[in-house]
Image (cartoon, each protein chain N blue to C red):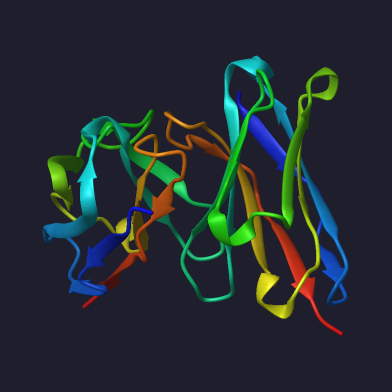
Length: 118
Length: 109
């Protein structure tokens, strides 16, 4: 069965970076993209961006351009999302999901809570 | 960027009633690329509908999606206790960037 398992919770100071991993199983990794979505406490879903696991093409939300990098490692079927220059308003649950530019997000990871606090 | 506006913000209904949720786009969206998700408290979102009207795997047929252009609707024909949750629409594939609506909470009246 398709599973996406994310890395554990992180606590970071303002200005630091965080890298969240998302390990996929149960399907051929390179045939789907990985979408990243975040959700601040008590708020709605925010699309962060997408990466093709086939060729590494990416699209990022405009507000995160320059601070976010999404990558994949095909041998381990793992996707990564790195967010730099963290601010308090980056505190959120971060989700990865299987899905790409023209496919809906059909399987989701369990989420990774990132807390940014001094 | 395509903005999706969901209404109402909160829908108060009783089990067994029909729920109708709206998602309006700021510009025309291809029906092929409009999805609906359900999120229960403390859980990750779950895909319900893709392509505006196709149910995802394992989704009960009381959930249905419709619409085209700028107006889309999610209908839950008879609310079950587990359907009380927050619902989000999403457009994808219409531009390089995807967006979500702000969500509609369906609560027990």
